[in-house]
Image 1 (cartoon, rainbow, N blue to C red):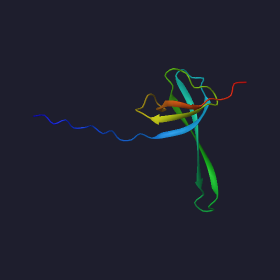
Image 2 (cartoon, rainbow, N blue to C red):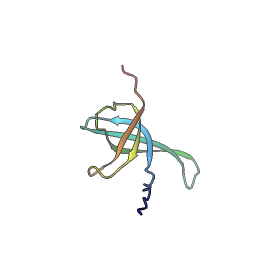
Image 3 (cartoon, rainbow, N blue to C red):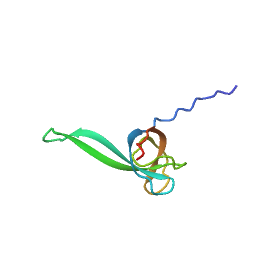
Image 4 (tube, rainbow, N blue to C red):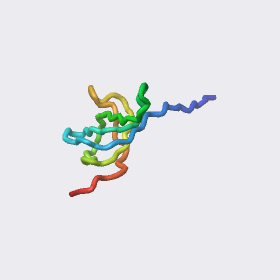
Length: 92
């Protein structure tokens, strides 16, 4: 009589941002913007942060809005991967 346990993995972080660079092979740079309140002055400020994400098929283009998810470390700076492209940038 063997009991099968269902393995439940923890939820991974998902972020939405804009592609600001795609020059490296299979890597995109995504800028994620969030708002926060200044601790002393209580003014709402925008905080921007850059993340390096793995793009296996090199499908994300400059200006695209994308969704990235946390993953195991893939290199020194890269520990995110591209999940999907939510909105494509207009082509000039």
